[in-house]
Amino acid sequence: MTEKAKEASTGKAGAKKAEAKTVKSASVYAALAVFQQDCPAIKKESKAEAGDGKWSYKYGSLPHIIEEIKPHLKKAGLVFSQPIVTREGVEYILTNVVHVDSAEMIDSKIELPKEEFKGMNVVQSKGAIITYMRRYALMSILGLVTEDDDTDAQGETKAKSKGSTAAKADEKPWLNPEKAGKVTDTWQKAVKYLADGGKVTEIKAKYRISKANEERLLNEAMTYDDLPFDRQEAEAKQAGADGEQMNMGFDEQGTQPSGREFPPDHEPE
View 1 (cartoon, rainbow, N blue to C red):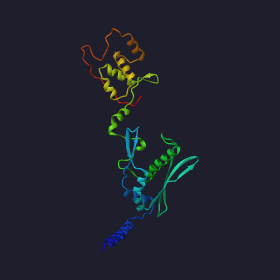
View 2 (view 1 turned 30 degrees about the horizontal axis):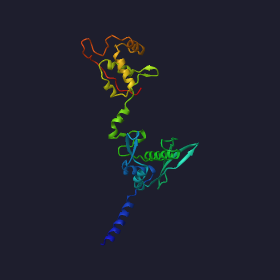
View 3 (view 1 turned 90 degrees about the vertical axis):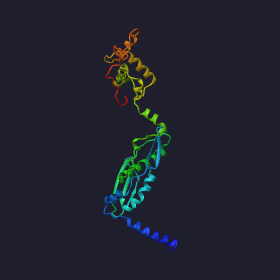
View 4 (view 1 turned 120 degrees about the vertical axis):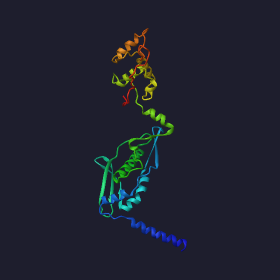
C-alpha cells in the first residue's frame, strides 16, 4: 500500500472513529453529565501581575477555555451562547447551554458591574469586565475547574521570589497608638511587652510601625510601671521622671521577669 493510500485509509478510519465517539443523550442534564465526565481540568496558561509587579498569578483565559471545551461540548451534543442583555436599565450577561438533540436549555444571568480600571478608559474597562464575567459564568454553568482552582477573582496571588520580602511586609498590620481617639489594646500590650524586656525587633516582625510611633512606643515603655495603662497618666509620669530610675521590665535582682507574652496576631487596627 502506498503512503497516500495509507494516509487516506487512516483519515477515513479516524473520521469514523470520531463520529462513533458522539454520545446521544435524552436531556440537557444527561448531556452535561457526559461533558463533565469527559472534560479535564483547565490548564492555567495565562499570567497576570498585581500589586505594582510585586505579585503574579496564573489563570485560564477565555479563548483558552473555549478551545479546551469545544471537542467535549461536541461529543456531548451541547452548544453555548453568551449574549449581553439590558433589563430595566441594568446590563447582564446571559449564559445559555443548549442540548442539540432535545432542544432543552439551562441558563444563568449575571449582572455586569460598572467599573473603570486604572490605566483604562470606559470602553476598555467594560471590555475587560465582559471578558472576565463571561469566563466565570461559563466555568460556573458547565462545572469547570482549573488545575488547582482559579482564585484571581479573590485577588489571591503568589509573591514573586524577588519580591517575597516586600509582599510579606505589606501583609503585616499597622501598629498605631490610637483609634477613634482611644488607646488601642494592641498598643497597650506592645508597651507592656517592651517594658517587660521584650525586643522592638520582634514587634516589627509582626507589625508595621512608623518611625515616629516606634520612638513613642520605646519612650512609653520606659515610663511604664505595670499599672493600668492610661495615656494622660503615662505622659505625666514621663514629664516628671527626671532623676527617677526607669522601670525597664527587670525585678530588683536585675533579672528579666517571667511570663512575658508577645502581643498576639490580630486584625489591623
